[in-house]
Image (cartoon, rainbow, N blue to C red):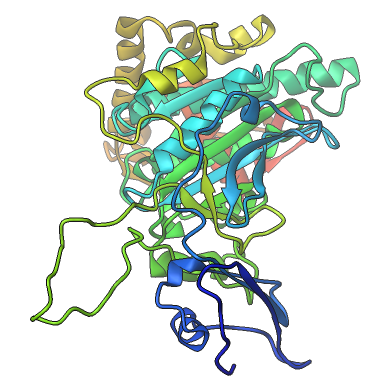
Length: 484
């Protein structure tokens, strides 16, 4: 494009279009040069993924400062949405917590590099869940450091990978229990205000649980997929907050990524490899482009060695700036509303605590306490939870490694050989020896009497689910399984 005169003190808006048969693309540096703009953070570009782009030039960066979030922002509207931020043009950014038109719980994916404001963005959603009577389950895998104010403000809280596994197992069982109750009542969807609260299970720093080499990667991936499949229609949502590195770090599962890309996806400051993966995995529509987000808003200028130079000011940061990829304007830059103190504090942030409010968080319905199991019953007893977490660790360490089918290697004298046997192989052997399809409880009995290490109900169900997903085992009616 040719040079365009832009007034320095006015907002200028340009609609650009390429000829038919072409798709629009742009280089931000070249665009700024053509516009005579030396500060690229003043330029906002939105594309329609096809032939057109809307370019807006501001006198200064419109997202350099945003107002604080209020509790009123976080009250769901009739479409199940809350206001989490502002677009560059000042219009509200609305994120959906619940879809009343389908009765569906949502899936959430929040990406951001270190220091991009991921924890504060998550904190906004956690406050919104409490404000709207949503039961929140949260595991903060940064040892509780990411969102420390959330402790005591959610129904179920944990800080370790073992706690994450216990929480995810409980969430899956709650979803299944609700399915049974709703089926008996003739209900085919979740109804907000219909008795059971909306339940959100969130894993912060999820890459620690799902990255390659993580001890609980296979089980964590399976449980999250299971929640995504079974939870939507019974009011159980799943959310992950993770480092923006590579989508392979999300369990290495195409099914998991495909499931999550249908949810509410927020992208904060990212890496170049992450952007390629977003496009390759379909999380960002082909042809769409996003303007990069700098770490600070300091304008790069050339300074002669003979001129005075002040390098003390790094410029304001861009924490919380990003894109709501699942929204109606995926290429429009936005910034989350400010939550809490800007300056670091020596303890819990009183502003954030005030937003949460003094009321008790919404709890899981009593009808599902049995399904949630011992982990939920022990969630406020640190000693009891430590015992349960230790049991999970011992269960995982009891296997010498991970098998291709997701089962753990079982030590013991099973089979008379003295060699380690994969749980997946033991399940397949039990099914092959049976005269008829087996229920999970019968498979568990057979496995635990084959001479190998004793396994738990949860461990068997997880590996059985993995085998079924892989096609080695066939799920039949009435909860029966058979070799595929």
